[in-house]
Image 1 (cartoon, rainbow, N blue to C red):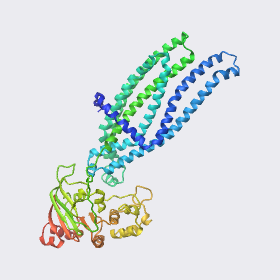
Image 2 (cartoon, one colour):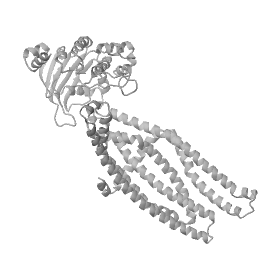
Image 3 (cartoon, rainbow, N blue to C red):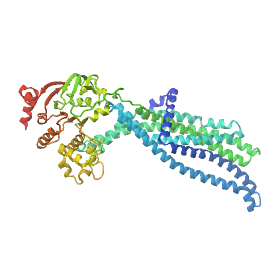
Image 4 (cartoon, rainbow, N blue to C red):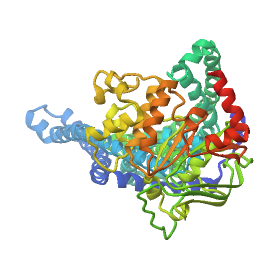
Length: 610
């Protein structure tokens, strides 16, 4: 890896293309913190000119100090001589320190606003991105780079740009100070830092290329660290004694990453040593020439002191500016990852002329000649799939894993669109309805509901944030889901914090979490109810009790239940048995038993086990 980077030339076209990202980066800073940025610029302008004042005051001090040293040493001579420039010089130094402190405060406020603004942009894109993106490793690489860079690159860029502006002002002023000593001196100053420019540009590109190419390995190292330290994996890691395996895997990846980075750093250090030595050689030659002029009486000691200060500061500023330019370029390179992520556009979008869909009762649902394959797969889940669901009915979907049951939910919710065919609600193609309008008509319990580390009340209210819900509505949703007793046993009732992410949280069993999720789904009184394995974590007695209550709740709604429990399926009006993306059996519980097919065999086997 390191050898490959060492041989990689700097592409001028790539440099130019990346440099064009700078205005976009500046726009982000301005959008996030206009007033702070304006104040910051004023402070930088003042700080950029103060060092020049210090140089001139130094010359005045030295030139007035020489005659004062050879005088009578009286107070008047001291006042008329070095006192005034000394006081002004001290005041300038104090002002520099004061402004530096104020600038740090301003920059902190500015940087925090920029960081939060960019994080908000990332959140916006992440929420807008299609679900398909979340199943792509390329998306996670892109997201990882964007998130990592959003934490420090904007702040670093703000600091770099400030240093660049302030240093440039000071450098121009220092060049003006040096020109009277010889027109060629500013050119010598520029020549002394030319090698440093080459080093900065070359290694900024190499650093960015390494970061980009190592994203997968860095993310995998983070994954092993998560497996070792997270609660989700702790039981299996202990039971199967996986700790040493994951720890060694992490250390191997980190060792490789560390070795590559150290090799890159070593090469950069050698190049910087050469550039620094060349700069010192030019400075030494120029200073010898100035000393000869001072010996000949062509310049005063004050002028010599001013020249040394101006040239030394100019050279330091040139090197600092080149490093800053390299850092700006490097940060812009990495912010390219951010802009790449922010340019992600969803494919599941609203129609140009969306149709209105208002429902008060459960609508009919149709899948017509649907063909669909997940973006990450070449195998189609459905090919010419058809299914009609009568409005206001309760339908159960059965079948082995991978039959396509959950995919139907995703198509109906427009998390994906079919390649061919249409999904219709009340006779309208869902692609012609605004996504938000469609999804407000649907309430869903997914197979693996999210465990929100919030209070019980907040967990349930997340099911419908369109209005404020009284405790009566929350308790009704809990009752419908069979979760009332769960909440009654918690220390603070509805105000109990759930989960163990935060201090004071109460952990629930898998079945209790599922009932909380059911309550969340039931709070939204939607005409379409989609439930994926709603009773999988319930015991047999709880299942029977829940089914009785649910049948009353489901009246007037269109309900689709995915289940492997036939005791849950039997309560449905129609049962569809799926296999490899097709419907192989349909009918009521009694009808399917009479036909003696797959459902009847499964019922006999399941009842025999119980």
